[in-house]
Image 1 (cartoon, helix red, strand yellow):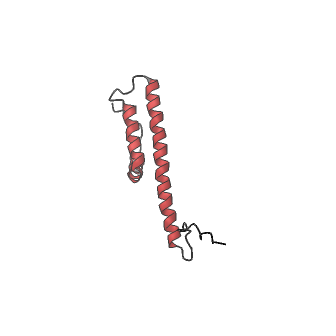
Image 2 (cartoon, rainbow, N blue to C red):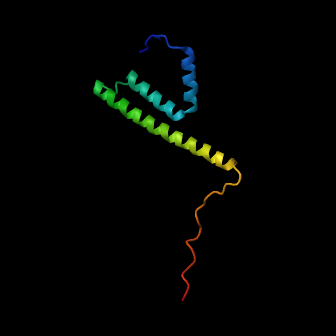
Image 3 (cartoon, rainbow, N blue to C red):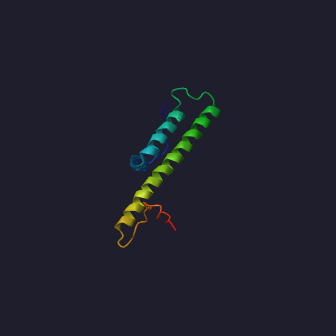
Length: 103
């Protein structure tokens, strides 16, 4: 069921769409939330069921968004450190040390 527009700014909608295109993990969750809100499938019979479905989706969206944020942050930091000169990356040792000598 479509509700009439209530003063929704077209530019605001376009900005939101551009942002969602950049974050597909959030877009997927927003679509799922809208499915719950519209309840076309009749998945939620009571308000309590609808609330529970929405809470689950919001939690998943938060989790997915934070994972995406962490991936992007890691890539950004790796790029920044890679561009710096004179920085030595710490790497794990290949060896556990020298074997004990026979004394």
